[in-house]
Image (cartoon, rainbow, N blue to C red; front, side, top):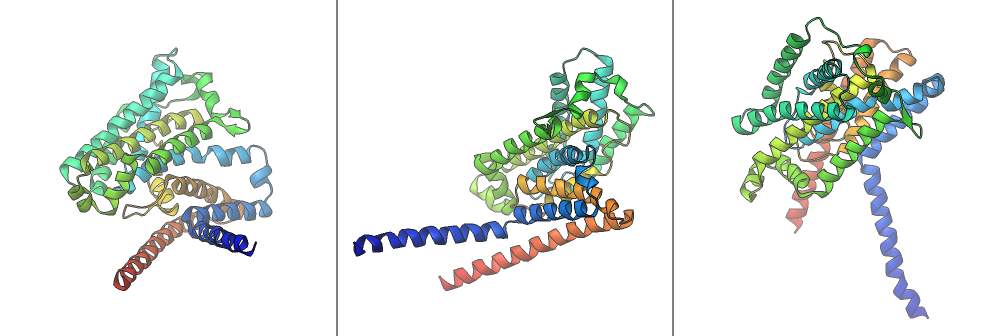
Length: 348
């Protein structure tokens, strides 16, 4: 009988140690840490002003408003993990949002699904332009996408001019997407979460997604190993552009109006959301789940700070401090991991 008891002890100890390791990994997770900050911000602001969460449509707005930034941050994550960046997503959003209004005003009976497809296709083409210039031109993505950001914005301004898309130009069925919910969850939020799940699964479980991480970790080693570096970088930019195009369609449904300033400056928020969510700006690490939480955190902070009486300048300063803090933390953790690997190698 004692033998049976002894036989079971290692299994119990193994399960306990596995539980401890799992708990330790969870506590060290950047995603959980950022989520905890998000919950803390919501709780403290609600204690200060209960209407922040419970007044009118505020709770719904806290869910639906980040959906646009979430889509951009997910696409941005795919690009950043390859050691690149896409600064053109804001201009792409503006172009596709305006395209959405123009399609509906020109073809009133056009199916809504076709307009979503057109936005995705246009965004993918603009992303492909970025990818070709980066992958084949061997020019840093920061330079390329900064240039295309202004080019796409210039095309948008030339096309739109002083024109403005209004709710009367779009069908009510499309605008209802911006106000309707399913089981209390806004439809636009559901769309963003579905995209998040698909891309998250691809990056985590599909060979192509894992190769993006390998390329970002060490591009030279990835090339020597025979990975299709050029094709993967192209696919990352196409994905980023396509999701920016989808975000443009969602923008039109959310706000019901599109002017020449649509999407201006949101590209930096997308990068910030990804970095705050734990995506390494130097590539090779991070998840879309963290980027999504980062998007929710940025939008929530922007809504929370005025409620507690913080002026606009300090609102921007807080967001900037979060981004800088996330980058510094990433470098500290990376340096610590490198030292740990060196120590393990020396003791081997």
